[in-house]
Amino acid sequence: MTIDQEASESSESSAGDQREFAPFDLQNVRFSRAPMLHPGYVDSEVDRVMGRVAEELGRLYAEKAALRDQVRSLQAQVDGVVVPEPPSEQAVRILSVAQQTADTYVAEAEEFSRQVTGEARSEYEELVRQARENAGAILQAAQEAAASIGGAAPGTADGRERTTAELEEQVAYLKAFGQACRVQLRSYLEALLSDVENEWGRADPAAIPPGVAVPPAPRSARGARGSATAFEANVAAEPPEAGPDEVVSASARGERPS
Amino acid sequence: MDIPAMRASFAKAAATGDEAPLYFYSHLFLSHPETRQLFPVSMAHQRDRLFAALGDVIARVDDLHALEPVLRQLGRDHRKFGTVAAHYPAVGGSLVATLEHFDDAWSPELAKDWTEAYTLVAEVMIAAADEAADQPAWWDADVVGHDRRTFDVAVLRLRPRTRYDYAAGQSVSLESDLRPRLWRYYSPANAPRPDGLLELHVKARDGGPVSSALVRRIGVGDVLRLGPPVGHLALDGESDRDLLLVAGGMGLAPMKALVDQVARHGPPRRVDLFVGFRTEDQVYDGPGLRQLQQDNPWLSVTVAVSDDKNSDLEQGDIGDVVLRHGPWLSREVCVAGPGPMVEDTVARLRQHGVPPKRISSEVFAPSRPGPTVDGEVTE
Image 1 (spheres, rainbow over the protein chains, first blue to last red):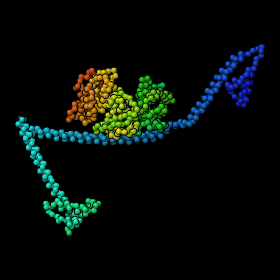
Image 2 (image 1 turned 30 degrees about the vertical axis):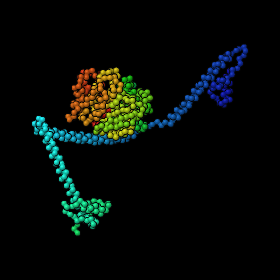
Image 3 (image 1 turned 60 degrees about the vertical axis):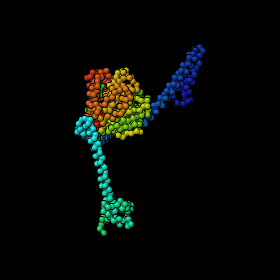
Image 4 (image 1 turned 135 degrees about the vertical axis):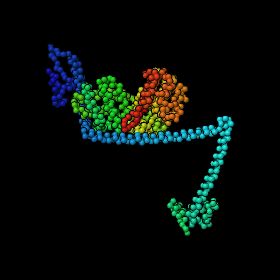
């Protein structure tokens, strides 16, 4: 039998040590010629089988190599992964307490916000309600007034005319009253103004330029022109940054008997 | 899987109240710190939710088939939180660790069963999330209008940057950078428009972090994130019955959307819209409602107040007012508003003789009821 011989020879020549039967080995197998009188297998059949065996072996080798690579890469992955240690009871407890604390704070903040908004809302609603009531009361009063005006007159066309006449009379009265008020208010304000100017003028008489200085006149006799001059002069005499304190002290000086 | 044993071990953890969820989240954040950023600063309400949700799952774990739609919805909806497939095993690990911690009779068999059950649940959720991968996880939307209507109500107009599909009557969850990781539901007040604009009606709840921010702090130019739309309040596509729409307070928003839907897409039908407020001051959309009525001859709008004697509007609880204007026996009815108002109105309409299957309703309740934080609404 020459297969083993041939195979071992060829493998020794290529790798130098005992190795597995490779597809290459199969291809290199040469069968010895059988004696003429005792013919062996048909050569072509043997060759075909050998070819197929070689092919199959090649496929298996390739698959083996691929699997080896896969095992290596998976092994590398497994080696690289740090399997997470289950957390210790103590760590779990600490985190639980921390989380509960955070939860409490958030709940308290929300509760606080709820209270504040709730109060704001009820205050708002109360204000609106009051305003509504007030408006209602005013409206009712107006209606009652209208009714009393209407009620004072008999419910006839004549009554309506009289009502209109009365109203016109009232309007005229109110206009006159308003005018009188304006006049009174204006004279009061003017008096007030001149009083103020008077005080200003007296505040620092020394500061008033001599030429313009007007002796304080009785309030009623004060001319608008004179008071204006005194006012301006006094202001000009004050330092630009004069504050309230300085004004007070100036007026105090003015009141000092000389 | 030994389901009774699993239920027993879950009951032990659930019996500890807040302890078990507290342990779970601390364990999760310590072993996978990257998951912390998926949650809001305060975890108080999150903890309640987790165990409530797990309880639901456990109650039906032997019938995963029935559970599947819920889980799929959960899986899709979790995308907006930034949840990815890698987070699921992390959660599973911490869940098993938590159950083990609170169970003095823990066994390797229980660990195996729980891991198996969790893996099944997670696979359904991940698969649903993957199927929705052609949609964005969330939609950025610019605030293009902000209109303070009353002391505590604002009308916002949003323009999503990419196409956002929804149906009139549905709700949209949204989140703002001002209140990160706090998602709240609001219902657009218009049907989808060609220009994509959404109108939202927001009432600031006292102490409600998101609603207050939306009313008082957000302005034109800010950006909100929208989650996928949810909700069941919708018109029967087959029906062309005349409509009766009843809204209490902020429940007006989805009702306006339904009116808009009829106006845009038909079919032609009479629509009677009843809107109830407590006082006339609270009627935040008077001009809008008048405009709607002017534009649409098939629409009648009635606004009523229940607690405002000085008002010229119609007086009474809205359910009462609706019945005064009846009969409504042939109508398709939609009701939205606060819980008591919805219950009252639906009960009255049923008594009136409207078949229950023709009444759809949605309660707009505060999303976070609680003794300390009376907060948000599912609007």
